[in-house]
Image 1: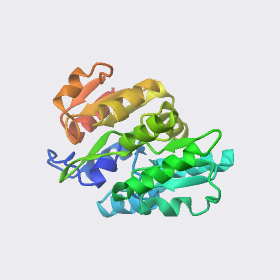
Image 2 (image 1 turned 90 degrees about the vertical axis):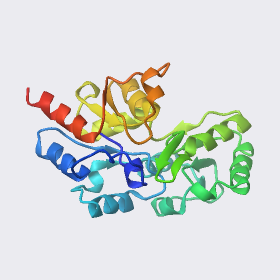
Image 3 (image 1 turned 180 degrees about the horizontal axis):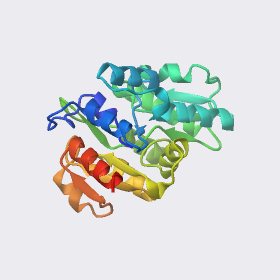
Image 4 (image 1 turned 120 degrees about the vertical axis):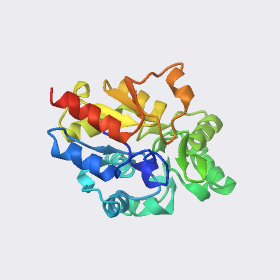
Length: 255
């Protein structure tokens, strides 16, 4: 597994590669290894994300991508929840079949510029009016990287609502172990048979390890040197770029 979100959104995660990343993805797909994109992307629908990846040269289908918005919709339907949506317009289509009248929960995602005081306060008011408030967060990332620099992610805003309302959010996305487990089930593999490749020490590495997987951290994108001395999470290995990670996986797969 690896996360495409930061690459699609303009990160320089692939800046050190001599060959295009889609070729490394193709190398994995042509091997006997199963591959899945596991993303916290919540500004683009899964269809739009896959379309962009295809435009970049990736041979990929929606069935090979685990994304939080479709997973959240399943939860809402199963539990009869009607959300107040604090989300980006780019994923609103994912919730087109969800009843949002008379909300009995709040769904928060990376809303970008829609994270205004007015919108945050409205979500707060909805939660405070409920006897049993439910807050569902699409991922809980702290920040991500774009070409213009580091950007606050949904986790910061989720924490604000948790604090103000005295509740704990349910996370659908990384680093929640259940999110990784759902991806593993869709792939038909056990956690000890899988490895995560990512640049986020908490969301990618820590989340995968809590699910029983091993994880490689890539020293690009949002990676920071201090990650290698994180007080709680230590990757099973470090690689300088995606090419090195793919070569390492293929080397062990052929043994």
